[in-house]
Length: 311
Image (cartoon, rainbow, N blue to C red; front, side, top):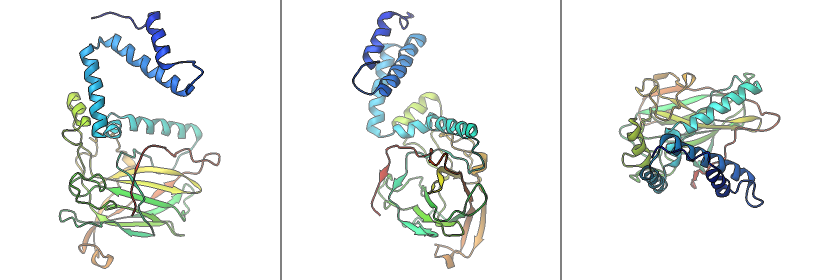
């Protein structure tokens, strides 16, 4: 079509009307955001000569994305969640906040409600013949190096099939398998006794993989373990580490890998005495450093829709 109409008064008036920009009803912030996003979309249609067929293919794609429940997965896959981390990193630098464990993306598979144990939690609730035993342990400190007592460390990860409990399409896992929470004592230590995870791929017939296919990209992640860490005197940390040696560590479709978040994996024995499924096990020490509140407030709390279950 190769016509340019974005800058016409008709289109600018349409944008203002559609977003009710400056209207006395509704949310001024909502009006501002919708006006900007709609303007960017309209201009992209003009600049790239996007056809009506392509526009309606996009609308149909959004319907599929919603039906598949994959909007949060796509947000990770397109780098949106990583971009938010980049902005928060920059804000921390500007505020002079450094020295903490690096943040990285939450992802879409957290489930609230895991029981909180004192110091140690065994979280492999369901049998998994293809996964070996793993201990994840460490110490939570502040940037001053002192142990943080009363911190709650939440942990969640996939099983040997790459599935997370609660979201497992096979229905084979209980809600809190491979999920748990530990409250640190005076020494700041935490420990999870679990099984070694593997990476996962996007559902092959889902909307996220459909778009990635169009971009010529894979939808796989390396093996990793997620964490939330909270403490009354510190900012909440959202992070994860990758399992050392995974071939996709530097090719993560969700862009979550950070150099400081690849702890060593060490082989040990004595797992039987710990109540684990075998005597030989893998051990990962992952120490966590929390940053202080900013002017008495935690500016790291992100409000988003999350799944929950009763333990």
